Image (tube, rainbow, N blue to C red; front, side):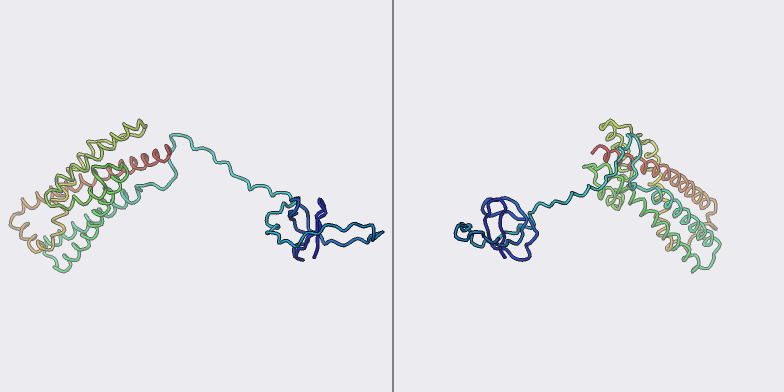
Amino acid sequence: MKTQCPNCKSRFNVGQAAVGKQAKCPKCSSPFTIEPFTEPPAANPQAAAPATEVPAVKIPQPVKEAVTTEAPSSPPAIKEQKPQPSGTKSESKPVLPKNVFVYLWAIVRIIAGVLGGLGLMMAIRKGAYSAVITTFIAADVFLILGVVIELVLYYKMWAVIQDDDIPPAKAVLFLFIPFFNIYWMLSMLIGFAEEYNSLIEQRSTKIKALPVMLFVAYAFSSVLAAIVITVPMLCVFVIARRLHGAFTNYAQLAWTALFFASAIAAVHFIAYILVSINTCNAANDLTGELKNSR
């Protein structure tokens, strides 16, 4: 099919599918709409000058580059985002959720304490050995779960401040080194409070500092609880049969030791609750501060 440029009157061949589409004249580069060209009847054929005919030329995809006459569609409406006022807490997911590191830990340790006390009383009264062992196993399961929650807390709180001297993995793994872990427990927990306070002081933020003395109390209570409660509870299957004899032959000493262990457990419980609340708040506040400053 032939078509003609309305500007320079040049004619060339196009495909039938190009009718009605936009193209550029290959001779004068003027845009035009492709229409079939019909040879008009000449009044004087002898006087009519032959029109210049351009050889057939392939049009390189003119349709895709054509300028359409349709009105551009209006851009989608953009919701205006109000800037978050400074000083407000970030609505993002907390780094250290209290539901896990405070409330869940408290429930787990209470269950472990109740089951451990029940197993101890059954052993003292010479209850069925199978029932004593089953109770102690259940107590140990909850005790280990509580320890795992504490270890995860240590890992995440050191990950928040990103200290080069004590990476998160080191803070946790050094606690499994016998005897050295006593020193490391004190150094790691107290050091976290000091490093955190130093960090927020350098950044000149209004975030509340951590109470270092609370971390000191928690560190010492954790060491005592591990020695007096956690380790004996994990080894209780070895001494389960001897508990009744201890309370029978050394009643006063045995009850004194039980009272001392219970007091340490209570102090460690309260200290951890206070430390975990402060640590969760501190880690979440610092993370929100870092996000807002970017």
